[in-house]
Length: 425
Image (cartoon, rainbow, N blue to C red; front, side):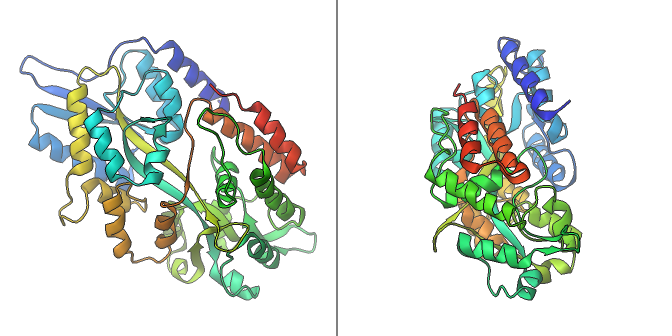
């Protein structure tokens, strides 16, 4: 099923299942409570780290046991929805911040208790909070946090005479045009700047990063389109000009071509570093550079932050115990006593710990200089909006951008059409 159609089905199920039964956690005659935690941490370090924390909690809290339930990310929202509709929703849910508005509207996630919300708001970074807050409502504990930066191949830029990473849109466009290479038939062999990526986010996250660099916004607090203005038009014109110059091509996926030298620069999320290290091995250190995404003028820069959260099911029968576990999970220290165990778990995966103190501790000891711009972006990035209707607005914007990059549509007309398609909910 196409992802857009699948999301529509999922949201419909959420609406029809809003009044169904409670969470799947259980009690017994000896007052033992079992909490269920549904997440997409299904393999590798993500699963191992979460399992380690759950095992420690279970050992220390014999009367409140936590059981992990895992699915692939592509199945997470559907699984959450189907189980919720059938009265088998997990007590604790891990979810993408973009879904927050819909989950809140469908009464899936519970209100964060005031005392816990106060601590979270005081101890987590603005980018992390923004990514998991709908309106004025905090959805849960921020977990994964990613920001967007400009990745570049140092050797390709140097060979093209680009001596330093670009710091303005003019320099970025110049570097893209200098580094692009074509064969005798005009087919791109090396793309100058990639403005596209794999997955649902495709064109939107890079565009929103450029929009942020120009001082623009995606959606207003009420869900209305805010991108059909001077800043939005400037950002999309910048992309359109690169497409017209054939320095960018939406058919080239940087996640597949960058590692082999087929892409000179790409606007991508910080998680990509882990993949590039694995794929490029020794070439990573010699070839890969990371810098802030520049804006139209010197000194301006932008990024997009998106995140995940862990919250409690509104219909859990053991909400107090669920919040106690989440508080412990997010506050207890790792063995070194310097950072939280959750912060270490995330940092070990190449993700930004959302807690301010953990971020500060890791920034002091970053062994990879490419991580510094990613961490810095958490202080200024636009948080991805997640109110009801945000997903649909994102789809409308994606269609507009692709119309410009792939079909040569007029940028102003494309933005106007996308803005009309945004329907506040």
